[in-house]
Image (cartoon, rainbow over all chains, first blue to last red; front, side, top):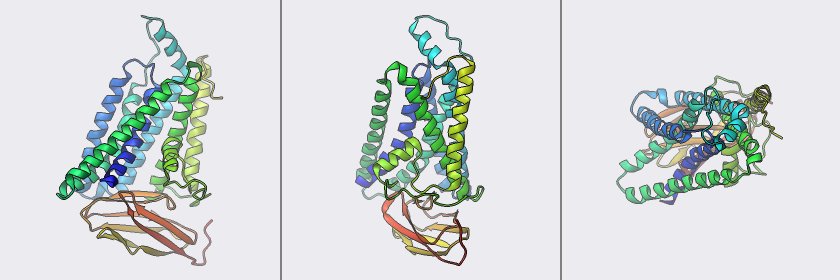
Length: 274
Length: 90
């Protein structure tokens, strides 16, 4: 029962943290909750389908197929997070300002509604697939079924609660630091996801490793410890990264940062990251 | 190379591989529960549904021990032990 709670807590927490950061960062975008809720719903549906295919159909969704799917989903999320950040760097302050002046027409061009739908979708589908496979196996196993389900429920609730705490914390950040903090959070989150995608592509042999374990900080901060796992989710901490993972991480970080500077400056409302 | 999951254990629990070469690892799950083969040291994670086989690439690696575990049951652990084969990687 405890084991089930721990597994569900970890899986749910990962998706919950991503969604919390997104909800925090997009707090001034009208109608964001509907898009995010839609993304979560579609993500659950997607996870169910992938889990069903993994157990029933041929081996496409296991092994290579699974890793490719993970990589594609992660890279989509990276693209969406980047777009969201760049868009916010151009419109964020304007949006926050106009919302306060009641009744003002909001005309900020195309809103990143697709990003608000696809980011939760990607997070929930990826974490959901393993969770559903695991829960199915438990449900099929008659013994201990009830206590294990109960443990799972407790774990999932715990994960959502931590996500909500992070969200509440983000909302308390004073206005003038808000965009800087959320922009950095999303920037690091996206870079971490890009590194994970590189890992998956290397796993199937599509990308070279460019050296396994360029450095090893396991002794300092073990990736399996709770702080290690939290940092892995939030900023993409990898104790023993490969060259390709480092390349993807830095590439995403620098590309997004440059885009934010260029687009933000062009619109005359640059959000300073320092 | 084949790694079998049977009765909640990885078999063999120490998988000997040569250094400096890329290896295709087949993970066969013979149990009723799904498993997730994961290793921070190898930077790998893959779900292996119950009674399914999954393959992945590891390496090329330097000599040493690379622990792995089942992310859905942390009591299940093992390691890939890389032996010197005379070819330097990094």
